[in-house]
Length: 321
Length: 315
Image: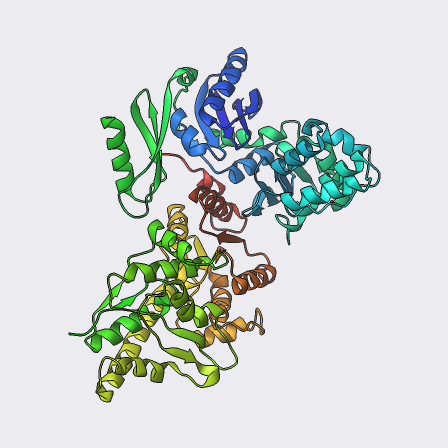
């Protein structure tokens, strides 16, 4: 039997199918592009073919990531879990001896401390997305270097430029200033990679004891420049799993496997028409922004409401329009 | 017929609400309390406040504004210090003047508490009472009764929680000012998400404030703010009884950011999470952080909770 795990993040959408032994038999990784439901349809199309080839049918579905409510309801998932738990589960399955999990994604970054195979502490970035993937993308645009080539540039540098990485806006002016006074491009890029790591260690990793083995994952872990900066600044080896970007999805699939819910999943679900609608409830001065999800015109689920009345009104709204 | 006094359900109401209500009631003065904070109240407060104002103060202004059409007067005390050698956050000193500057047509009632400079609560509230009741004995009686009544309710509340702290099960301590924890938009969602996740929630409040303060010295002797001292003491008191601690801070808050740093550094081995809320906060980020925090508490070794308890299955 197979288990489908879907991780719908702010920037990318990931799906895997694992077998009973926990091996990944199908995988897909695509940009979310601001439309999580469409992204899920596309990743499902890819994993369906691979799962068929591996002769695995899906018996349970787990969903994680920032769009987990929406996608979980659309797919009728058995397990809907937050991304921190999912990542810890996925990483532990592949690296049972891990003690520190570093993760930098498109808009958030987290650290999970694991001792004796059990997560014991974690932290996540607060209000600000500085020091995440979107910070690097913004600076890459400024330097006119594709973000995918950042790592290669950074490795050429022996003297990374110091760049203030606390805030994207200040980093940008600092970067421009350093470029204007003549710092070479590879030093600037290596400096940016260090800035991101410094920012991470000072904010997310503040006060946490980072012990080896360290596994680094999330989209930014594909950037060898940042991996090197982590290794330099922590003085430890950094493990980057080739499926590191899929850990959330793997964790979600494992959670679905561990859970009790079973229902044969039909990949044809992705051909159904899903329709989301947002509106302001207006039932009380809170004016909750309620979102409803309909499948083929039929009310599936809704959220954003602070009270039950919000959902009742949402249902009525769907059936009458 | 006496005029109606409006009590804004914000800031000190969450500490002195019982005292005020009982005091005015005994004097035969009708009171009206603003409704629990909602989006509309917050938006009104944000419009009235200058940008740098903290979230609880914005909410407070919204409540005052809400009461203008419902009450003849709105009670906005000045509280500069409650104990010798200590101080309160400046917003309690400035509340009256800030309110009057932000809402010039507001009709406010005030009383001043500044123990450091010799202004104590009892005579000050009695002075306020005299503007409604000329008979001094009746005012003294009203204050004594209100004080007794509010103290009794506070003790009852705190003892109930101290019993709950000894019950089995996963327990999370939420550390924050009562005006944050009890606010419908700030703390109430945090507490209800924690409960949904199967944790029983304790708040950092003790029956005995002076015991709390002496306990707070174990974490730091140098904190000057009375309310933060009480919170620190409660952290020290409850920490052996709980599985994890949530710090609930609103943006921007100087005293809380210092206190939180102190605690997180001194509470070695205790899982903690710091939530900084501002008016733009969406619920999604809050839920993710609290869910995973409770998952982590359930998975901890030595914790009384098996790993399989984490597998949340959607009904």
